[in-house]
Length: 360
Image (tube, rainbow, N blue to C red; front, side, top):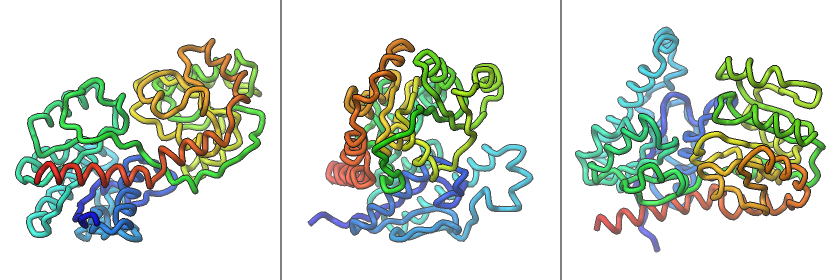
């Protein structure tokens, strides 16, 4: 029988766990599902978050603090310097976690915002596990490089491709993000249109998805938010038409219905996507994905089985015309096999035990 572990997990106290439906922050869902799954497996899991958070199995430790975005006294400061306020109160929560560790003696401390734990991780021999959620580039790359000199910090990547810019850090495992498949209803027979989704930024390539749909002569529905006004106004809005429809922002819990009705998700991404939850969410509905070969795409999408991996617009147009070759049940089965919550939780549990055995 495996040893029962005492595990501390923290992602953020910016929002409660789980956040409002109009707020989607993938690391928070991942931390929540991991904590609940590990507790269900019998581990002693301490989940650190705001007092409004709701958990079924893991123990909530809030230090009686409100979520940053729910604390009225912080409202005037959040509007002026949101990042500074969030950084401070997340750092405060993490310092209290390490202080509590002096008494509780956690086997593993799992922190998701990696920058916040750097000042404290070196002062304990207990492993601090960090899941890297973002692309390793720019300031992230410079700061992650610093963790190599802190042996107590152990990194978990969310794809093997994510590691490429800094392959020699203190990695302990790759654990793919898992999703709650039950939240994504399978549909065998889609309607006669394709979809694109995401923030309206160049990296998501939604303007290119429009070009692909137009050249293929198919209808496209777009869901997302205009977080980059110029990009939306210059590259998307002028291309909207009867067959290219913008449906607005859709709450996260309603995205399954949006994906499931589509013949495919078109995702000509323009960056090295570390994972891409929207790929797995679409496939869970039975909806295949046509995506550019960037970042983690070859790990997440099985070419010619759950969609098509392409290099350019012309290849994507050909894929659109071949989409009926993909069995929608294969897409669903692929996600069940590789990207379920249970598979993710098992991956984290194995990583924890591997670390403890090495420490011993």
